[in-house]
Length: 237
Ligand code: TIU
Image (spheres, rainbow, N blue to C red):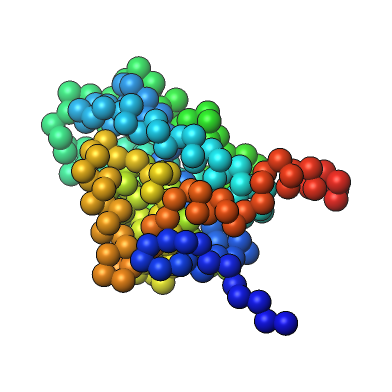
């Protein structure tokens, strides 16, 4: 008997959903953007605005794990010698504590430092991809497209920070490469409430010019409850 494929209630219309071809992408949930003294704070931002993303994103991550979805964590940052950091990025903002300088969480936006790490609440586990990226977009100068194509992934659920910077850049890059992107409104965060609002509108406007927008609840309605799935996993093994 023919059954309708699952579709998540979303703007501008339902998003086709199949866990076998969909990856959860978590953009840059690093201390450097969410904690005091990191890159985000040094740029003059109130980092506390991003903390509201953590709890809904934890629930989505747990459900995605339980459903066996591919999970990709990204981290923005640079090699310790900064050879992969363009001089323009290094100079931008005329910061007193620029990229590479010592901060309270180690050198700013440098790989291997405490501040560069993903927050404990969303720490990656074995089997999940951790992708280091030197730019705002997750496709620029990384092997993300190669990884996704090898895994047969065609659809992305995109979360993380910040909405109008690394999330938007990544969604635009993905969209141009033919990936279908669903952005979870309560799992992406911005230092600027107005950018959050308009950034989300820009994704789904014009018939979904970059992709779709839904809430974490809209997605969770299509995933098994993590506790039950974990129990089933134990029984099977
Ligand atoms: N500054 C800002 O809003 N974001 C970034 O610099 N990087 C990311 O969005 N990850």
